[in-house]
Amino acid sequence: MLKQITRRTYTSLNRAGPLPLGDKAKQKEMLDLIRKKQVSNASSNGTDLHEDAIKKPKPEFEGDVNPKTGEVNGPKNEPVKHNDWSYGGRVTDF
Image (cartoon, rainbow, N blue to C red; front, side, top):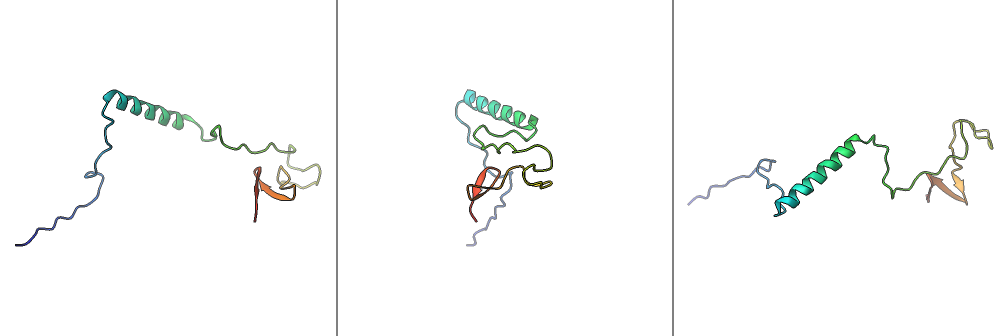
């Protein structure tokens, strides 16, 4: 007796779909929430940050020339403060 070997190809057509939530009203509510979030994300310009995200510090001076050092097109904030190197308000250690 010969066994017939069946090979399965895994494509999106033969994968199982997501499990239903059971309650059609809850499932519809969840899909509506997902669609609203996708629409709001698509309409934002991409520069919005999450409210928990750390904001970059305000620049110490305006313009292209640092008034203390005379440096042109340099960083807007002093990168070395308190003997630690910082970038974007976050201290890094080499």
